[in-house]
Structures are given as C-alpha cells and as structure tokens.
Length: 254
Image 1: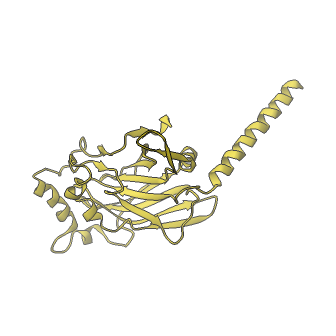
Image 2: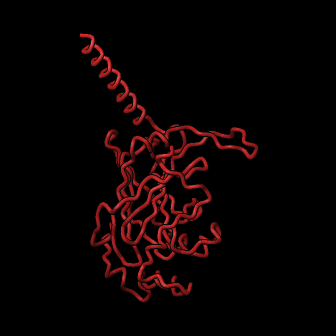
Image 3: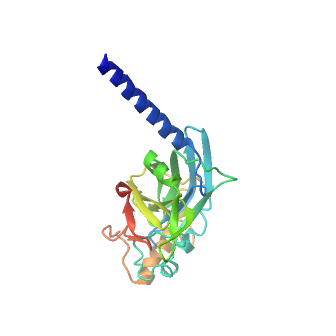
C-alpha cells in the first residue's frame, strides 16, 4: 500500500506540473507582440510571398504583412555594409536594420503561435519553398520571460522580452532560426524545407520569373558580377555565416 500511495502521489504531482506548463504556454506574451523577420545573403536574395502563424489550441491563423516589401533594396550589399562594414555578401546579416520585418495583420495577438509558415522564392535559381517552424515549449517560455536591459554602469534598466523570430533563408531551401531580443541572439534550429512547389503563392511560375527584358535571376547574378565575385556555382562553404552585433548563444545554454 505505501508503494501504491507513493505512486499515486507522484502521478498527481506530474499531472499538476503538466497542467501548469500547459496553462503557461497558453498565456499571452506580457511584452510586445511576437514578430517574424527575414534575412538573406546579399548575393542570394529571396522573395516572401506569404507568411502566417497558426495556433492549434486557440484555433486561429494570423497572416504576417510587410515581408514582401523592399527585399531587393534591403539585401543590397552596400546597404548591408552600413551596418556590417566587413560583410562579404554570402552570410546572414542578422539585424533589425538589414532584415524584412513581418507584423501581424490587424491588431494581432500576444498569444504565441504553435507554428509559423513562410512561403518564399529563391531568386538566384527560381525555386519555391515552404518553411515550417514549430515553436517548442522551451522557446515559448523564453519569449514569455521578462528580462531587463543593462545600463552602461551595469545597473538594471527597462524590462524587455525576446519576441522576434529571425529566419535566414538559403537557395537550397534550408532555413536557420534565431530568437532575438533584450540584447540576445539565440540560435534555435536549422530546418529543411517542409515542401518545394512548382510556383509561388501568387501563381507565378519559374518561366515567368525568367521572362522580360531584365529577368529576376539575371538581375540577382549581376550583383556578383558587379562585385567581381563568382556566385555560381554557390560556394556553400561561405554561405550562411552569421553577422551580428550580439554574441550568438545556443538554445541549450538558456
């Protein structure tokens, strides 16, 4: 009997813990609403045609807007070098200045999505990818945790939250994900494409991207030509290096 009572007590404790964790995950963020940012190598820009977050528990889908704007201008190497003077054109410039920021449509929500979907086109080779990122309980906990900025004298400053998910997109469909905020940049995952399509979300095919007096792939390749650098074939040993003002931390260190 004592063993049975101890077993029941343990099960009750574990159940209570799971319920507590579940409730915490369903709570809204106490800070700024969550946001998604996109970064890309200057020599391998991408075009985002659709992005949204979904919540299974709350049964909603929220589109993100703004990610399709100014992608060619924001990714220009001269523009990126204003923030990172030593930028080589192949890496990921992870900064609010050099990224496309997607905000929730309408008023949005502070509830963290369970998954984020990004539909995008790699312009150098005109391939169409879908990236899916499942936000883990650990990442949700980090996003909901209040921290404080530190003043130059080391004293506690204003409260802050890590609510900005950065996605770095590569021409083979792979993606890297970071969480940014409060002066931190935390590397979360590397993702394979969830799907490759034969056209973008607007219905535009690869042939259409290649048509016209200045086809998109040709304009993209011209960046390397103007810089006197060979970008085709893709030098994978150079692509994907991280440029950041913040030290990159690992999720396992949190």
